[in-house]
Image 1 (cartoon, each protein chain N blue to C red):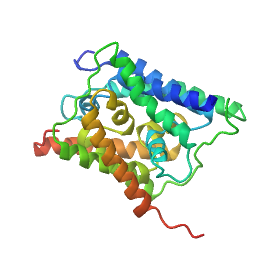
Image 2: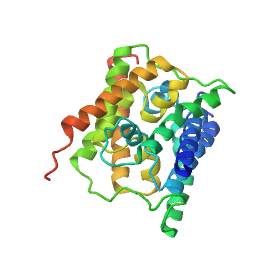
Image 3: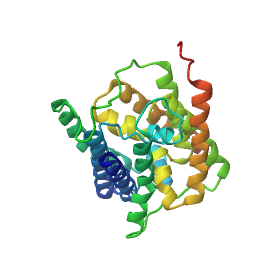
Length: 145
Length: 141
């Protein structure tokens, strides 16, 4: 892509279509929102209500299964930061934040935005803004993730 | 049974989509948020691709009274935009920006980088537990 040598617009769009069809299968088939933070909390028994436990478990187990199927056929990169402390702190904040805000990139971002849900539009705008602010502040402070 | 199969198919396709789109790669996701650095717009194409079939799905939901293999649509109620929503989303964004991981890619990445993915997921579970036991307002019942 001109100006953005590392961008993958086509692979991104195709992968995005797969994600959207996956969420549509969950919605039109089972009548449920394919929100990963909600499904994950349900699997752990940490949510009130939500999808049946077995449904949440099978959806959650499918995530690494699907990634493994792709990785069996081509290189799949997952570049994590080296600091384990940073990873742990980020996971903790994501765990609290997604439950408090009732959704993450899948529930609010994909399922909510496509529904034009006002809550999801506000939530997505907010986590995009604080995400950009965090990366920018780390850059200014010279912190390498 | 049919609900279980659809759940597994949905999760597997979702995870495959995360891998194909590059969203399973924390460095790439973080580069999308890095607007003052070497910005990588890939995530915007992923969102466009994902929203398209879901927008159609929501139109189908309006036309149907029930899902294909369930009794009813369990769509979220239209609750107000409140401080919890804003605070939660703001916190989530901070954690997302720190390493470039949100829940879906973190769980899918178990298949690629199991050790750091598991650490993130364990911390995420602790965070969900803190929310469950310390932050949910007591129900007046």
